[in-house]
Image 1 (cartoon, rainbow, N blue to C red):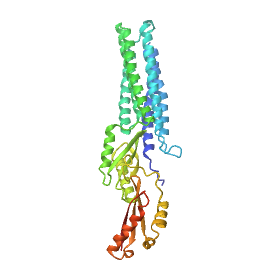
Image 2: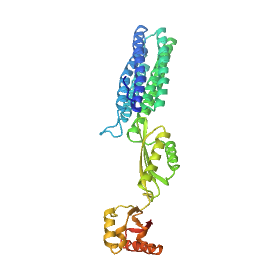
Image 3: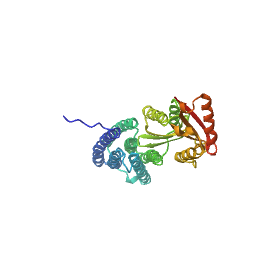
Image 4: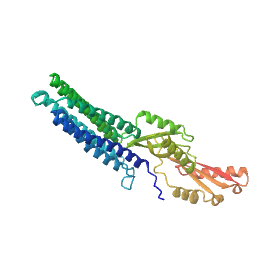
Length: 387
């Protein structure tokens, strides 16, 4: 008995995109053959052009499968954030194909508008083929767009609009054929120009949205407000700043600084950050990865700690120089340094037996503090005694 490996989300997403795209490719092949054949038999230049348009869609389908396949690849050493943006690159290409197809339709329609003698005299079979084409393409548009929205795929959305553009071009065929039969030969060209403008707008809109992803456009204000609300509602988070987001394929990455109590242990601060990270990933659909920087204070306002000596230098200076004359220095159990607002706060832990009495403990704590403050970078010293 063989055990199948679990399929990760990116691979599953690719399988969905591939299935939808291949269904679209199959419909394009069948329609292209029917449109071209009946265009020739029915004497319709518009239907022949529509068939060529459907056939050209196979190129975009191939690009779509290619983009989805490579976008689903897992992160590696050279692409630590994954390959999701390949989908955006292909979406730009598909958007431009839509735009160029619209430009061709507009050019051809304009030429036919000024050269009506180039129009053929189609028969009624052309209308039937065009109606079937509209039904198939509109169905593919709705099906593809529904899946695209479900998995947040810009590539599939562009493909969906490509199906819609094909349906609109078939409407042009009907208008053109009907206009020709009624003696209004120019109606075909005018309708073609209007629809071509609509197709061009869709192609440019989809391409521009993908370009925004490629240049790290963040999530919209509504998503940012949701992220802020969830972070600030978490216990232990005092404030947040430097919230940044970016889209990669159908996912979003979040980077944020959160401020916690500066006296917390490293492990507790990390636990708070992990709780925030998991919550954002689980509760916000688009978010797939969160990077959190822990701040003990608002580093946009507080003085920076750059230039302050590291731990080993601080301890060497205090223990070997300033506290060398205090016998209890040798009994220090823990020394914690807090780098806050451009200075260092020191917490010491001594055994209670080292002080003997409460009065001696207070005097000893004061002695440690006074001697340490000879260094300007020391803000204060707190001494705790444990039994």
